[in-house]
Length: 399
Length: 64
Figure (cartoon, each protein chain N blue to C red):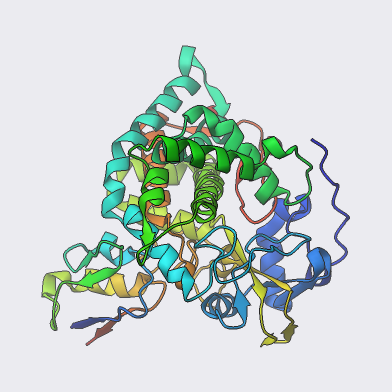
């Protein structure tokens, strides 16, 4: 698998590259610098891309479905060719009015009450992963590669009725599509499209009690979903439901490895956990979304033109000192926390309740099992590139 | 203290339902349903304030 090497970045304000390893290594500092000086950065890369960094601008763009379209949500050299308002992976790539229909089909499956059925399975998975990581008295393991990354893979596989062993495939798709978009050549039979066609055809022939079968039997105002829609939506759930949550869990564990006082607080004071989970989500929000500019629009000094990309770095919004008190501090019991880790506006992450459940349980089980731990080798920690940010290598040692 | 909720602003973040199930339920699609009308009982006023302070879409307002 040959990956393109990224050209060095001249200036973050005029030449940023969110898929560059230098961005992955220092994204928070880059956002802080840009927000204080720029605050909407531009780059000629990817055919023209904007990067707002203030909460106010990001919220305004997220709410503006007139000048911005969701037809494209992952910044690439090319522009997606499945037209609005449906897009290639509904509802994330859909615009009004179709968006609301495509979203309504999924909402009941992801409501907070529907999540209760995943609580026990998720907890059992976390325990099993920790059993394996700590087998035979092991005192060191990789908290991202051996723990965090497997949790959402297994939950999504169960939800879709797919083998948990397909996790390696899912991670391959995610790497190519999110971390190094369009920068790797693959054979047709190894593509996500090919996989989706296969599993949807299989399930059509043999329905079960799973989300794919549910979508195949669902309708939009009386019209059954076409196979392209079902494939796109399943692709979305595989891509969006995995590395995002894995990143949030990994980043939270990275934090706890360096803050034993917070680990202790979670153990001593279970009532703080819901607040801590929201603060982890604020401080380490993994997801930067994107839009394509549909109509010319002015955001501050930035004159955005149709066809330009505009990134929506919700993690940068979450660190904006104009919007949050003590924005750059992790406050474990922060009471007022209007974070936008799950986005803002009509595209609020549909899996937010699932992500929250997985993050909470992953932390509860880790805290219950591991009295104290630290980074085994801080220089070995690797953060992902692209629009989802989290540690991919996180070696830890029990202390 | 009075609490009000604007369904047209709600995007189903469910922060209120998690913080105060005594004040908010959710419908089948995960949108909030405000359970109290008018005056917030005194023992729930702190929670009502929390709900308002954590709604990412400013769909909840507190008066008084």
